[in-house]
Image (tube, rainbow, N blue to C red; front, side, top):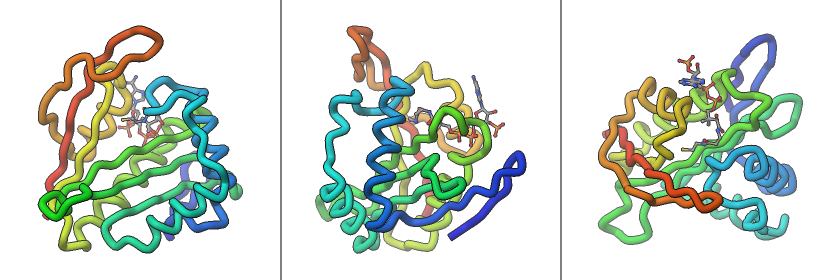
Length: 177
Ligand SMILES: CC(C)(COP(=O)(O)OP(=O)(O)OC[C@H]1O[C@@H](n2cnc3c(N)ncnc32)[C@H](O)[C@@H]1OP(=O)(O)O)[C@@H](O)C(=O)NCCC(=O)NCCS
């Protein structure tokens, strides 16, 4: 667990546990409604609380996956998930996603969540590379990842379609070991 203070808010970062399932489902629902940068449409955020609990348990039992949350006054305001590839040849590389509720943007929540991921990955000697994909018009996310040392690796043309509009995604990576 890690705490940090931003604009007089005490924000707690920790691994998600089964008791967070309901709040995490509500968090993802809110994020999907607030921004089109989230990977799912609101009607695709359909995990039941029981399913979310099982997902959280899977993350906590794996030593090469991580599900972190950021809370403020016990409310989940940010989350980061990381997992490696399914087969042996890709278990040294993983992809993560990070999201923060709009009311709490620019408080440093995503920065602190990603720093925790990087430190965890460095200590976990089996992980060599952190990947992510970001929409090319997501300026604050691009700024955030570059600030933390992520480099662009390539462009996936027209990879995402939102409301009939096609967007490029940028692959980014950070070598950690
Ligand atoms: C992208 C996202 C995760 C960032 O979370 P956050 O907690 O606000 O991020 P932080 O506060 O740690 O950092 C944001 C940085 O972007 C900067 N920023 C804000 N608006 C910006 C803009 N329009 N252009 C460039 N930089 C911008 C901030 O100044 C800050 O940088 P700094 O620390 O150097 O001052 C959040 O905006 C979000 O959840 N967006 C919707 C979902 C999403 O896009 N997820 C990522 C998908 S790849």
